[in-house]
Length: 367
Image 1 (cartoon, rainbow, N blue to C red):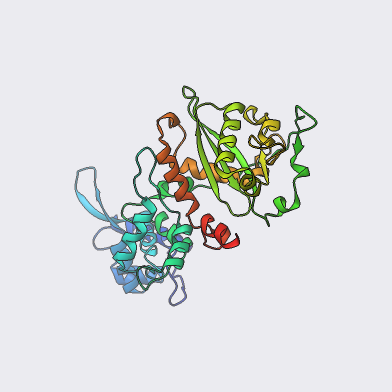
Image 2: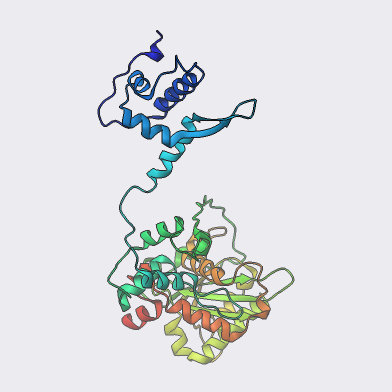
């Protein structure tokens, strides 16, 4: 007798492996080919395999499939692949029950905030799982159940929510890694201030009033753009619509902001502004010069070329805006009311880096 047909000894309580199932498949299907007199019954087959009769019976029910002979006669055979597939499917039901349980009220509230509210001209103003948890921690949870942001991410990945998928999450639920390369590019004027000369209070984010500024472009056929500013300390943001992405348009927007705040208010609000090396920010002299009084109103600092991480807050803000105004949107059709509504939503959005506070609340607290 070959080693395959010997009685194997298995530990009590040990689960069958895929290799055990392949041996069972061979012996069971070979047994079917024997004549009725020579065919082993289930008890003898279990003894030959080293299984208990109950184990063999359950395993056969799990892996039996219907087959056909060349004469189109049907018979039941055992498939190790089918049995292994069924057992692995049952393994998915292991573990604790969902923490959210049957709390439909909390589930509906989470879906509502993940999907967001519709605003004309924009994508839905929705919350990330982190922002939802911070918001509920502040205003109170709808029910007694508490879950963390990571649990919400797991529920979305496992399709626990009826109407929410990974594509509804910020950045579509993906976080690509970037490889940073530093490329040095000479500034056009030696008088322009480099980011290395920026005050330490700006680098350490310990004082409000140090801002980062950038532009969000529209599609090629549309010259409209958005001018975005964000405070490095408080994350307070401004969004302005400009008809052209030029240095004259940027200077006009800053002049209008100074007239609204006053020279003293502008100097207090905007102690410094960090920009990239785009052509729209090359008019640094006029951006620094006050239009209401003699003297400067702020200080303009230029980041190194191709080093977007030096303006990380601004890049993060632009990515956040793109979540609601995706690429391919013609910005000329956006109304000022819609942009201001988005600006207000962002400034009152809970931030993990601010301990769950919004930028507006944090600015008021440290004022």
